[in-house]
Length: 258
Image 1: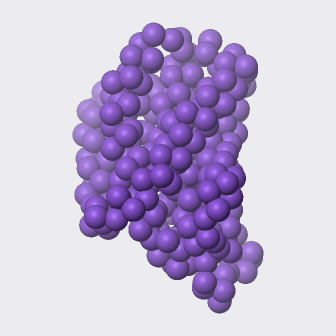
Image 2: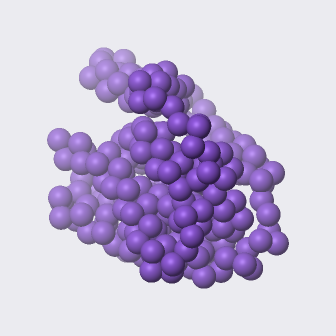
């Protein structure tokens, strides 16, 4: 029953990242367009490519079940909370959708349907008498790196590397929030709920890895849709992805230690 907490911690990881980014934007006295880009950069996390891959590499296939629970509410929050809030900071006042249409889109979104369906089918199979086919592990060994590669390559088409030097300060702020402040809160909450004792520590390791993620590729979409500061979002993605890669050996050491 403790695993019910995982989707909640995942949701708070995103919400706290966005909230702290807005507060930092206020302190930096940024304009509304930069605030909108800071909000999505701090809130959107690269779970579906980097997060899944690192958990798979560091912790093995077993961790993917807990990853699925941790990111269960991700798409719902992105499209029902983050996109509408980002729009408030932009210029496109006529692009808002009615809540009824938004809810309908959420219920029919392939990613959301696939996530919920996969977890429900997995739960049913877990309580069934069926044995998992031996080839399943081989398929996972191929698909996880392959899907990560596809997502990263598609991200590369949207990169503007020259813009990074103009947004170093904002990027460092996002780094502090996403790699220090939010992980400290979320991992501490995991220990508070005794999740470190679940599955020989795999669950708390998943929480640690997933809470330390750079901005997602999706964070580049709202700035383009709503006329926010595209260069800020782009620079934050590049800068923080590079920082995150430097943190990987430290993350691996921590996972081995705790």
